[in-house]
Length: 130
Image (tube, rainbow, N blue to C red; front, side, top):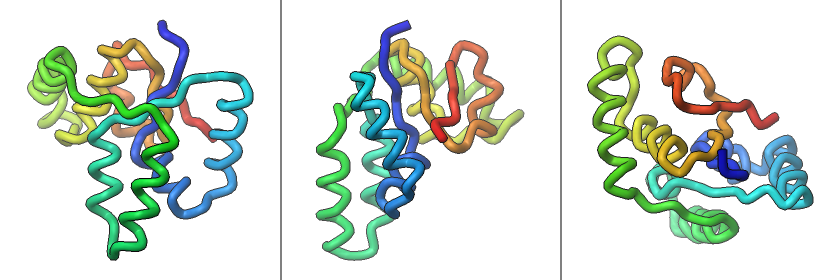
């Protein structure tokens, strides 16, 4: 497995809101030289939640602090298969399928505070960050 972590939207929301645990996790990861990534899907979810231009600017700054991973053909194909397998049985959503597929195809761990949404995906490494 590549070294690094893909931050789920839950972690970004916590950072956006000034959560101290999330900030400490990022600081510890940076000090340990652990590469941190975000999916373009998480960036889009964060942008969607903005209520005004001030929050849009704050989102831009937050996203700029990380390496952004765009969707690849491999990730979209994997997400499609995840949707076929888990959307009805486990309620997997399109954004979560795309985020999980990105972590799988990039061979990196997914850091999320919402492990329940991803627990059924056996080839995904999921860790609670704090």
